[in-house]
Image 1 (cartoon, helix red, strand yellow):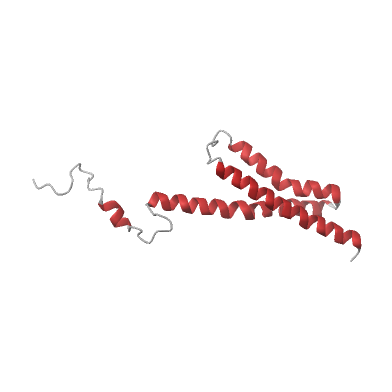
Image 2: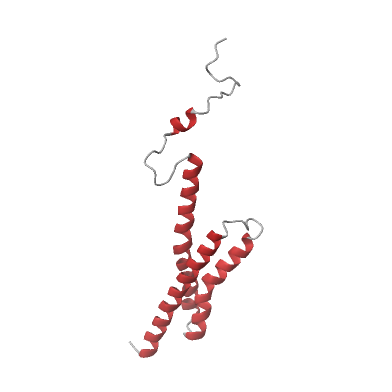
Length: 134
């Protein structure tokens, strides 16, 4: 393998590592905002994500020029690297939100069953408490 090809490979690896780090920083920033900017600023989050995902291919086109197929592959890899960070984070947050809606206390051994959680709500659909006779 020639030196130029090795340098191009190293540039690719370094660029994708930088992209992954940037994606983590961006994800933490969005998490700290606590989604207070949604839905008004969702477009800005998407735009920033697309720029972060596209940046490696654009950067590498300048550093290590290649044919269009290679460039296209770099674009795909850029989105895969960002997705590998963002998707698990979003799945985790969705699971956490689901658990909170279900009444689970994460990290606690005294998690109530569905029946126990709903037993405190004695109001029935007919407006009675279910214990009144007559």
